[in-house]
Length: 424
Ligand code: PLP
Image (cartoon, rainbow, N blue to C red; front, side, top):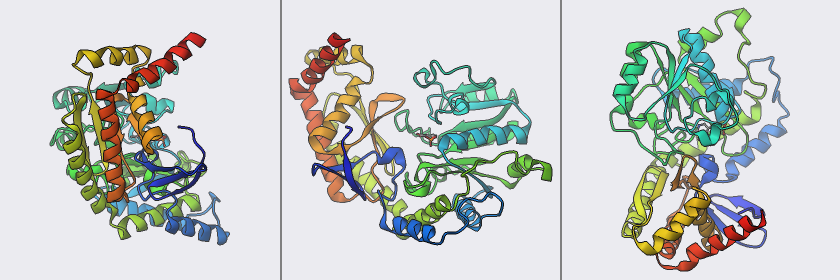
């Protein structure tokens, strides 16, 4: 899949050898407005031409104030302040520190099977050993609770050890899993009862990916903190933001002496802030939230109609344009043996063969979920067209049909794997 790209525009990537690839991964939910949106490119060129104070760290950045105000207004509830950083992981680190400073408690509770980034603090809030093995020790006083289990959550919150409960409102990498309908609302009530902050990781779900500005808005929750990243700056400049209440912000920057206790060198740089403001303009002017909701429904309806008849399809789910096609092990004897061989070589091999087939044979860029190797993520840019959706659905159907009927689907990768194994 490592091809040479020449030009990336909207939802399409063009390679130097003349192939058209349709992006159904969006850089893991970065490219909500599409690749290299011309308005964003123009705004950044204009910002550079200004030769302004792009990165001083000695003055108050007007652009950062403007972006903070717009993000907080869109997020609503008690979110009134923003801390800017450069990645989602750095946003999670900020949540850990600010929640501890505000509550004076050491513990952080997190939902099992989530994904929060690969710095040591973020890894401390993840249960999947694949990401953690060999990198410990991690933060003490962190503990997981099963996603959706209110009884376990209350038992743990009642210890009053936890500064924050951190989770994705819809778990992306664990296979695009929505919570039970009232889980988040009840979790919020429990967090308030026991003095724990509710911190939502909306790094993948934010910026209208699920149809609304935040996924939290589907579940009527008002979190104390929200982490945003990825789509915030249209895919061109690293940026993230942690939104929080006035009170949490004041707990950290509580005196003149503590005015710099938490900073990040590039946090409010003018290009990132301009990118954030222009990305919001584009999302709003092109009504990409409403579009994500409509195109997402259309995409899922079409996938269900064409795929559910196949034995290895377990589920097609999603919200807005964050979706997944979940596969299951085959029942029939003919498919069971090669599937087992794939699994013996690597548990992720089946998914990667699907991804590779879509890419090589049909010009579709996609990926398997990081914590669920049997779920194929379906996340095109929010500007995806009907024609691109039709192309995707036909491509997936062709690959799924092949895995059920063509021995080549299984034998070709097994041949490659045996040659690799023989050479080591
Ligand atoms: N949170 C979620 C839900 C993510 O999907 C990711 C990255 O994929 C992160 C946090 C970490 O973001 P970053 O890679 O920008 O550090």
